[in-house]
Length: 210
Image (spheres, one colour):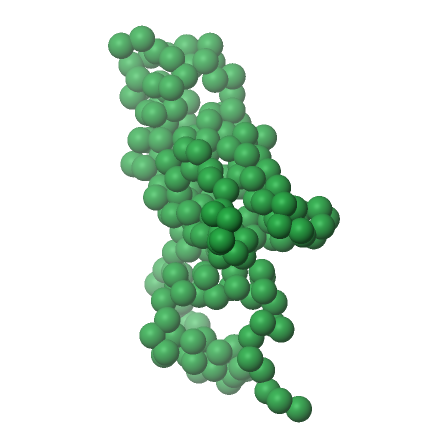
């Protein structure tokens, strides 16, 4: 089979799935393809370009052709749905969020941003505000998945950690966590609820009366 950029990227995504981002090296990738490392540079000039190509492939799975909202659909609900699709794209691969964060000049991310911003502007949101909303939503999503994919602290990190003292020092933090998850909420719910706060703001939520 002839070596081309598409084949290289497909194999790079498979290597990412097998070993994570730290395992994606030109040496390992070349070995999987049965070529020497310099051969890859005829198609992809450097590691940064390879990471960006992997990012494009990851995003393509959820955003082959990003679609605008239906006329009757609220832009807020549509934007939350778009962020959810981005999160699914990143969670589908180990270190997916790291790949997106490290990618440079991703055309697919630019297309997603363009669609989101133009949608908001088309619904009457001023350009500056539309940019800030979209930038905040996209960066929050990548950051949220970065934390998800980092995993829980291992046993060594927790060795000697005094949870009782932590709870005493930060009672409101602990109460907030307990209240949220004791109600049966999941990390998926938390993601959406955080987006609701970003997009709608605290004023959209019922609060105490004065």
